[in-house]
Image 1 (cartoon, rainbow, N blue to C red):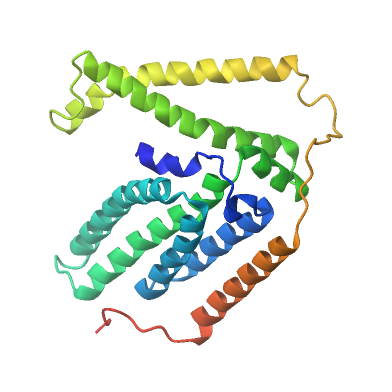
Image 2: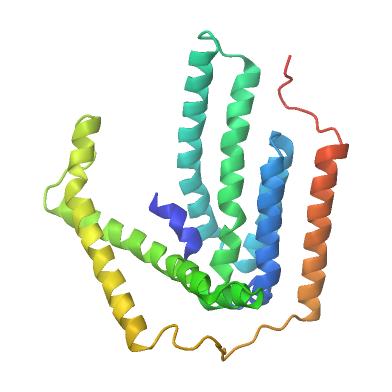
Length: 261
């Protein structure tokens, strides 16, 4: 599970994708999310996933993107099993090929949804994310809360892994026993993690109070976002892609890999 959060950890780079305006990259992620949401067929979903590969390669974050993809596959497999079980129980204990195709499409769409924002977070600093939301008139309180969550989720994921390794070194067996026993085995892991979360939140609150957070309603920023010609071109291509995806969804018949009948 912690590999999913690899897609939220920014790593500095000097590539074309890193230098793009964060607003253009954010709109691309939103477009991928919208198009993935309106499709259920495997073919367009596979195309959406493949469209991300050139950006991943250009940004030189292939290894970290693959970790996010592997983490999303675990959740996708769980969703697939749940869909199959529900369809099997509610369908008079029979399964048709179309049921398998539908469950696989739902799971695959989950993978595409997870990866749609991975490139953005891997190539965009939290500060740039905050500037993006602020430039769109999002209230700073909401912006600060969201950016703080983005900063701390990977930190907490790494902390969770550290605690698990420490407890295993002390003889705690997390992977043995029945389901209830495994849940009880995680208590020594969750307790220190929750304590660390409260400790970090208190430290953050004290730091915000010392720096008079919210004392001034008119905020300024040292850095201002400025769109370049290449950013406008990238944004134009993104909007064309979004319009084409929506148009194809409603006006172009898409062949199904497994027919419904």
